[in-house]
Image (cartoon, rainbow, N blue to C red; front, side, top):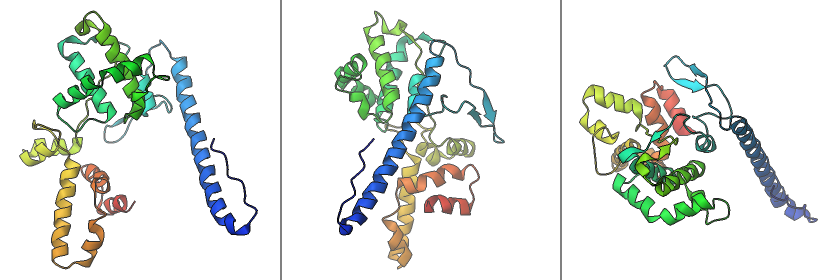
Length: 270
């Protein structure tokens, strides 16, 4: 825990001390909660070490399924996903190493560039990846800077083991390689409606670099607000600098799942 600040003798300093004290106390409580959560996940993982795990699921009215186990599941945190591997394995094959490198780049945070640049990123950092796999705790700890550090570390182990094997195409891999949609609801709308512009924004049509529909919508919103500013609308000037990708993402994402006008407004307000 972070040491709590000592109370000053002078009354004039007590306001600042109290704010610092409360902030430190809240931070320690959060760290305690995170440690407990970590230990619960690790305890379940240790009990199932080397054994197959089956996850019972609930299904909601939309047909979406959610795992029942609360601590360790494949839809959980970065730690959960880094711990879990497939029970049944298969050889990497001629393209497996390629996708394993892309997966590692994605987990590190290099996921908005073309595939060949992601491969280049992994190749350029191969020494760091090997160091992470061989000395994860006492090495240079390159993996800690990743967007998803635990999954990144698991991928480092897998990639180094594959490279060191006599034939990487025959290396037996248990590691899940993620493939995710780009706002999947909008992908369905674009496909069903034959919307070429929308299909480009949600990566249904090949492009040199991944497209981001949320950034595209944000640009359109900013252009619309700019027109309002030019027309002298005062409130448009007030909100213009506050509009970014983060503000509009949740509302765009949920627009295809029936979010109401009031619900969307609350999302933006929050």
